[in-house]
Image (cartoon, rainbow, N blue to C red; front, side, top):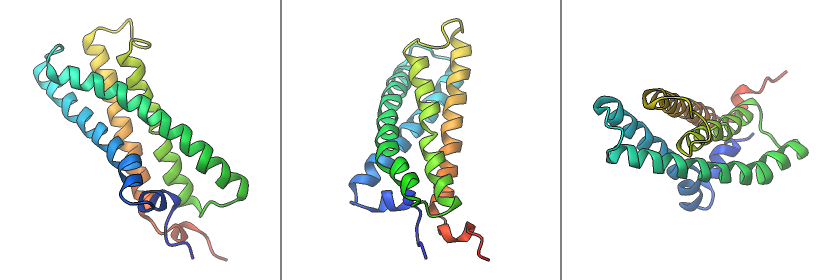
Length: 158
């Protein structure tokens, strides 16, 4: 019987460091982005402190999470796949959705560094940025929900 997914094991091991590195920093970034996004949407101040914090956080989060993605892909996904070590569908879903957070965070990084969205006006960029924040929040929560499941619950027993 596998009591926890690899996602939860990652967060529970080497306390508090792995929890801080793999959960706290990305979630604090996402929450900072969500809050600054609301401030910018309500005030329409495209040059204020909230916009500056949002931009810096988006750039940092993209680079940071790309590092997490590469590290976990090399040190967890490839070895677990090669050895058949996955603990069932919940395990794969949790890790897969967690790692898919790289897509919206990199989207924000590319947007904030001007590598995408060049033809959009400030409102268009703001909308795209909000979409990326929303996508990250959804994939992170799916990862958390499936990560907290006992992986044996989704394994069909015959």
